[in-house]
Length: 462
Ligand code: ADQ
Image 1 (cartoon, rainbow, N blue to C red):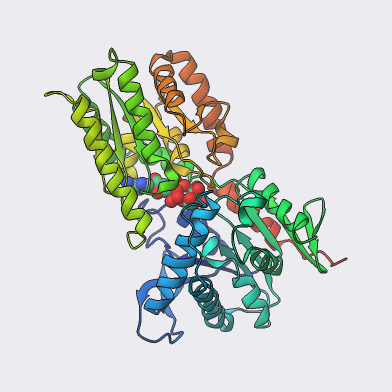
Image 2 (image 1 turned 90 degrees about the horizontal axis):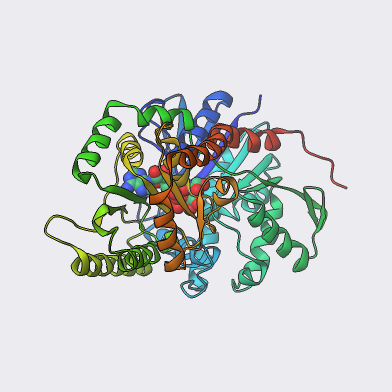
């Protein structure tokens, strides 16, 4: 069997496989490494004065991790720059926030070349390489230039933007061309996959035959593989003693009111500002419901080095203050806004206590919070998921969620009322539909779908 080399910006292999403290992705990738043997490679998160390519190896939970340090300039240009100030906003349709600087693009390529230089000596001829996400689009090409002819796959965790939007990226054509260095490329949804094919076909002249794109004699297999959560683990987490305690604490502090919960990284793509405005609209339009509910928004800060993230934080603080100032009473606060992370089992208990899960990104590759909310519910008395139609997860959960346009405060307000009034039979039926998907297409299914394609023997080039 081939060894697997997984490469991602940050490495988060679990210290022990059942701690339950890490996300589903880390669990799934670590399991793949345990089964196949191999290495998980990435940036250590540390900086160093002069890049030296020195690899820090670690063993834990049956997984070998290998990490390198980067220079501060690397981090500024590659991570805070091109990845998070150019690609992230553009790929989330925020052309207004995307910044284009040659230094970012240059630093991004330099770091990918550094990763390639560092990882190349670790690769054995029969290894299969799986690269994760938008930090590393050109890494496959860099590895090919260093004589690596292994099977290499790439999975994109964020949306792929429509063709004309991608055209705003100065290096768009070059970037897409480099992706033909891969053997397989995966997206969460058919929509993202179609947008990718549109660009490759219409702008670069690639040809599509079945699931294979051909450009200049290189064949690239394209696939939609929606990521799931580790459902078994999450259901178990939702019944753990910590979850039960968190559930009880929430219920006690709710004193009979219905909890609406939002859990997101503090990121403009998650539609938090629009969510607060939609909730404010609900409070305005439905004075009779006001003291019957409250919104708990959990949003740990992320990417604080990037200006647009500092701005969204300030905006949300202002907005929650304004709404609470306008509506709060001595015994009731409409929004509890919390800026910290919680362990997964505690989060599971909070989800379970919530009558409504409010997941309203403006654009999201998938959105795992939506699936975690579903998995944590009590089957006999589940809550309602209100979900943005612009999250990748909507393609799988549309049969059970109340889908909304997150830009519309009116739709959000109406959906909250609909969810509060929904009778138990309808809630159970909707939840069952969603849970069937969350159980069937879990993270193990996702990982297998991708690695099966990646590990299949290469097709002969036409
Ligand atoms: P993210 O943008 O980080 O992921 P998401 O899929 O929602 O978004 O995953 C967030 C994870 O962080 C969830 O597992 C959630 O439980 C956890 N989390 C969030 N807030 C937390 C808190 N306060 N405390 C503890 N845990 C918290 C990117 C893409 C997504 C895609 C995933 C996986 O942007 O679209 O679904 O990768 O591919």
